[in-house]
Length: 357
Image (cartoon, rainbow, N blue to C red; front, side):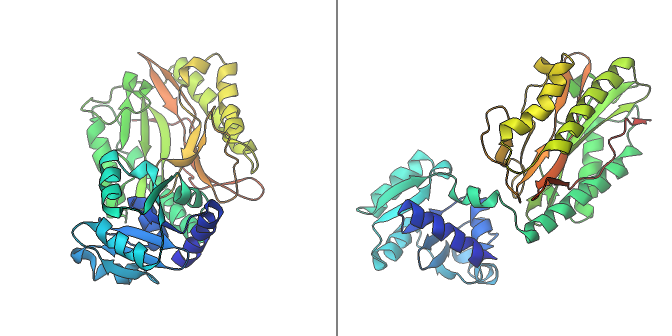
C-alpha cells in the first residue's frame, strides 16, 4: 500500500520539478510509510524511499515501513539528510511548509548549506483526501463503534447526571471496544450549554426538559469517526421540536443531494439555505462539514469558501446546527464517503427526535 502512495507522491514531485521531499508531519509520515513511531522523517526521492529515525525505533521501523531503507540519523537529523542528498547529487529539497516552524527552517538552512529548501503545501494531504478501500473499511469500523457508543449511552442520559460522567462513560466504552482513544475531547453539552458549538463536557448536572448534545468519535486503527446527536432529556417544548426538525431537514437535504463534481461551497448551501429559509441563518455560524480520516479535521471542507471539487473516495462530515444562546442548540452529524454516483453514509445512529430520562 505504501508503495502505491509513494508512486503517487513521486508523480506530484515530478510535476513540481522536485527531486526530493522531506516529510516530518506525524500523520503524513504514517500515511506514506506505515511507521507509527513518535519520531522520524521520511525522505522520498524519485528513486529512493528512506525513513530516518532514532535508536528507539530501529527494531520497529523495518517491521512497519515495508520497502523503505531505514536509517538511524545523527543527533542532528538534518546532517544525515544532507549526507543522503549529497550522495544522490540532489541540490533542492521540498519540505512541508505547514509543519515546519521558523526556528526549524533556520536550523535546517544552516545545516544544509548549498542545498536549497523549497516550500510545498498540502502534497501528502492532497493524496490523503482520496481514501482507498482499506482506509474506508477501517473508517466504517470506527463509525460502527461510534454508533454502538450512542446506543450504549442513551440509557444513562437522565436528569441528575454530570456531563463529564457521560463523556467518561462514552470514552470508556469506545476504548473497551477496540478504540485507541476518542477522536477528540468528547462534547457533552446540556441545557443552555448545548448552544455552544464546541461545549466540551463540564461538571454541569443535566436537568429536566432540555437538550443534550453529544459530539464524539472513535479513533480506531489510525482513523477517526465523528458523529453528533442531540436528544431531549425530559419533556420537550415546541421550541425544542421546531429547531430540531429544521436542522434535521437541512441535514437530510444535503445527504439527498451531495454528489461528486459538486464544490464544497455548493454542498454547504444545501444545509445553509434550509436553515436560512426558516429565519435561523445567523444561528448557524460554522461550515456544513469537514474532511475526516487520519485526523478528525482535514481536507476538504464543506463551507461557504470552499471551491474544492468533491471526488469519489473523499470522506466528509455533514453537520448543520442551530444555536440559540440562553436556550440551547441542535447539531446532527453523519460521516459520509463520496461515491461515483452520490454518497454512502457511514454512521447509522437514529436521528429520530429522542426524548430520554
